[in-house]
Length: 100
Image (cartoon, rainbow, N blue to C red):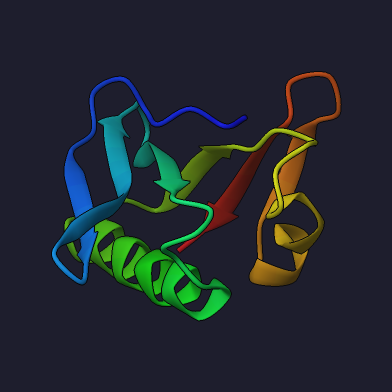
């Protein structure tokens, strides 16, 4: 399965239950790393897209220029990363980057 980030910056709540977590890690040169975990039963695709839009906007508002995001090839989001504007950085690392 897909594990939640170790030190989440924020948690997502839906219907009174934790439904996911978001970790935002400061990096260099206007870049942050974002890790998102979403509960497979409590979160819909629409919920995930809304969460991602909020996270991207938050990162943009605090001054980041790029988001660096890990994504496993077994993740249900893998096939959608490029459609959401992310570019794969290196096929062996499975990280994506997006200017914001």
